Image (cartoon, rainbow over all chains, first blue to last red; front, side):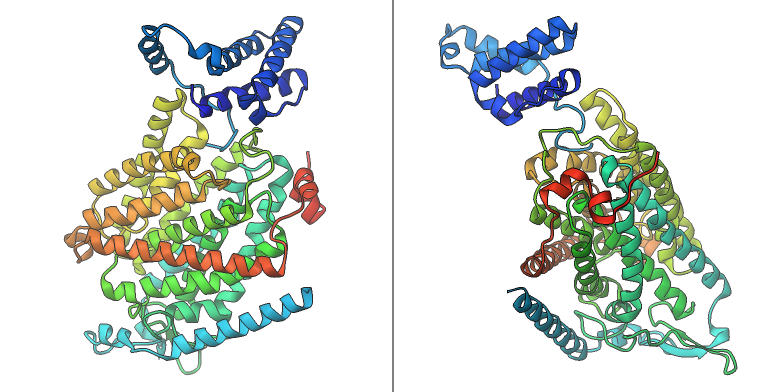
Length: 105
Length: 455
């Protein structure tokens, strides 16, 4: 997953957390630091359950998946999975930045 | 240090003034050669008998002038104010109103003379400096006319062109909103209007201007107004830097309903802009009006469809932006193309500007807040180039050339980029261009004007 895609997911989660829980996060740090990102994922999942906000859990899962894919352990998988993964990523639409982040249009 | 900077600014202003006089007084007088074909036509602003002007043309041009001024006040003010955050709405509106007043005075003080009187190929003369000219002598039955528009009073022509100078300067507001100091903005816009807009208008629209001599086609300002403002806006946005939180936080627009009202006024006012540029109440003006409308409609629909496909939903802001994109692109072509060509120009411009305001914007990584370059810059470039391809000799009496158009647009882009950057660099030595972080956080309505939006 590209850096831009990770940043887009982080930005979306940042906006959701601020709106739904009041928690302010650092978007750019979330997209590059696995430890910080996983802590935000844990917090988002917790609040998703407590406050019954499924959207939060959904975006936390996306960030979790993105960061797991980026970690060195995740790089080691069977060779046959590589093209399949590439095809899956091509079929899936790229995550869109939340409205009005980085541009009005 | 501050005293030294003020002294430096004064010296620079004097030097610029001297350079302008020198440029204006040197060089050949090519306008005369161009107009000799009509033996009786004036080659420079002159006094003529009342009877030589056309009442119909004069009436239409006064109407067109009002329409174009309505595009700025309140068109642009509403269009932009609806897109900024609530805490910056009044600052955005105040900027547009102040620019309209400032540029109006500067126009009659110097801008009109530098743009629309004969001088060199680079700059007009000084005949109409300092509120001079535009004479009307009731008893003698005489009035002044411009050599560019000999069938209407010079007062009407100068006012019509004033509204273009005003709207071009006002367009820049979209690139610098929410972070530029009001005082710095006024000084910058005032100087930009004289040092960038007036020379470019002379190059393209005064018969002796070098781009006019070269045969570059720009019916109503595709390069003079839109490419010029788009590039200058991009330079401003780059020079000022991004707004705090840009790219991380959503900047929710205050009220897109206001933006739609502004866009509607732009659409209607553009009939004065384009059909008025025929400088006559004739068939060419009528066709210019029709192609303007068709291109706006095509631009709105193509942006809407593009957004629908890419993002899954058509938005009101997309429709408003698309119609403006179509209007911008038809501007240089309005008096040269047929209805069919207008549809093509509108469709291409809608998609090109959608890319300009989204994909290109991400590539450039510049916080051009309200997409002045993405819409006006890209739309102006597309329209100017397509004019070279689609211009009909039957309609405009001339054939287009893609190469000439590209050279014209390139020259305007280069001059606008360099002159705007130089101006901002000099200004930033003398004053802070940007508000401090606390003021930006509070909002410019309170920080710059001590006013708050009601409700």
